[in-house]
Each structure stands twice: as structure tokens, then as C-alpha cells.
Image 1 (cartoon, one colour):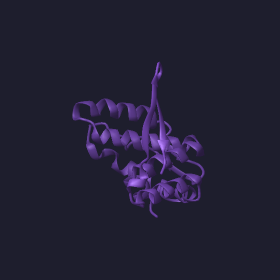
Image 2 (cartoon, helix red, strand yellow):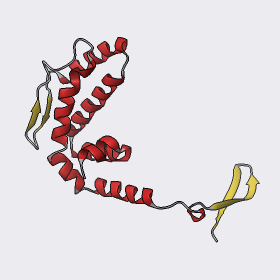
Image 3 (cartoon, one colour):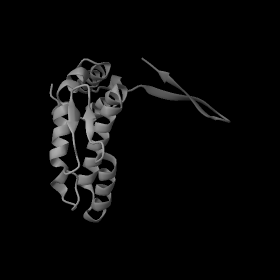
Image 4 (cartoon, helix red, strand yellow):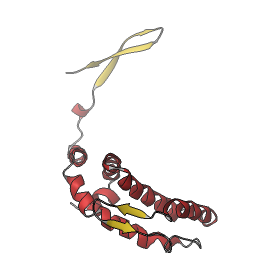
Length: 153
């Protein structure tokens, strides 16, 4: 199980890792917000990229990114984009991802959130048959809408 596969390639893994980070504390949330902002920066058009770079610089340049639990500190003063270059954040993003892929990801794999991820992946492997769906039939119509019931055979 690797961070790149679970968090970067699986949408449900990214969502559950984000929920775990919210539960862990503000430092982890700050890392995820930075990664989201960097992702938006990469996808933004050239004319809007400059204002997004200013917003990223305002939020992250002064304090940087710091995870005291694992001893990670990243100063972003000189690394933040100023010219609208698409690749200017890639080294910062890589450093944050490498940090999150270490000890924080190991903690995530022992949490309830990772077990939810495994349950979801197991559910995805189950075949879909006619028994997967239930048949509903209308019992009656009233002033507030239809009343339906599930008929299980």
C-alpha cells in the first residue's frame, strides 16, 4: 500500500485521507490546503494564475508548512511562484507529499478511515447482479406524494 496509489490516484482514498487529516489537526489540514491550492494553480489559465500565485504567497510565505509531529518544516519564501510559471510549485508539492507519505500515512493505515477505504475497495470488487437492486412499487398516492414499498423476494 503506497501513498501515491491510495491518495493521489484514488478519489475515495484522497477524501478519506483528507478527513483523517482534519481529525489529526491544523498542521495536516494546512498541508492539504496547500496541495489543493497547488493543484488549482497548475490547472488555472495563464491570466488567472498570477492572482492565484499572490493568494498562495500571502497564505503560505510567512509561516511556511510545519508538521511538528514528524519534524517537517518547509520554508516557501523563495519557492513560491512569482512569474506564473506552471512548474514553480512542483518542488514544494513534492516535498509536502514525501512528508505526508512517511509517518502520517503509516498512521493513516492504522486508522478507521483506512479501514473504510478497504471496505469501499472490497465493495467495488463485488459483482453486480439483479439481486443488487430492489424492486419498489407504488402503494398509493396522497396529498404529500407517493408511498412506495420495497418488495423483497
